[in-house]
Length: 83
Image (tube, rainbow, N blue to C red; front, top):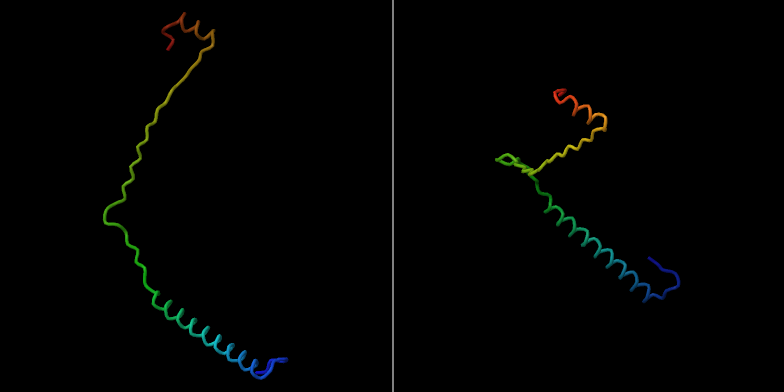
C-alpha cells in the first residue's frame, strides 16, 4: 500500500498502524460476538398459582337536590295525598 507524499519510514509506520487498528477492531468484534452468544438465554413466563386480587375501596355517595316551582309547592300543600 502506498500513500502519496510520504517517505518510506512514515509510509511503513502508517501502514503498520492501520493494520494494527484493523486487527484490534476484529478482536473487539469477536469479543462482542462471544459475549452476546452467552446472553442468548430463554425467558419463561408462567401464571401465578393464586388468583390476582384487586381491592377497590370505593365510597359512592349520592346527593339528590330537587326544587319545586311555587305553583307545584302550593298544589302539593293543597292536595297532600296526590303522591
